[in-house]
Image (cartoon, rainbow, N blue to C red; front, side, top):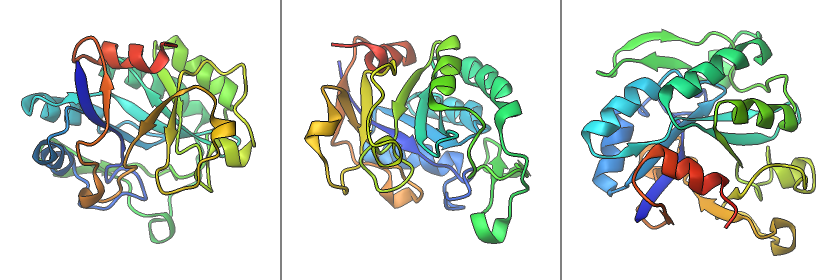
Length: 233
């Protein structure tokens, strides 16, 4: 089964996300564009996954619970999970490693939590834009405990990427898939034979991806997507 996707979207929970990136707006824009699968991967947080999962289901869009974690090396890693319960349990373990520095809205942006009607019901007060106190290897081990998958984000981008920050892809990483940033130079010699995702990394509604990239999965379920991301073909 071939399914179109955008697996890297930021809601208004991320300090870099526009205030227009509400749960309903994201899901409705994905529906308008005709996407089959989406993931909202906010920075170091997952407070919107439950509500977006419910909204996406009503639009017959498969939602993959996700998070973009910034490691101790300041590398962005996309973390995907088979269920909302799994990512929430992961987040509970991640809490002790998150920065306790207060968020400065004027510098970093808002970190709003909304309900299923896009009403504001709270905010995260610690700065989500900062690294968690976990190495890439430690993060990988934690994600795997919850049957998740990790994908190094925008691997060829000039900031917060594995190749720029480390200069190489560690051979002992249990990854089968990497994310490519379409607008950055690609050095094929450094990328290996990994499967590749191309996502929008959308911070604004209009930049959510068109249905131009697809993956082949055995059925339209989160388990099938996790299998695709972790399976070495």
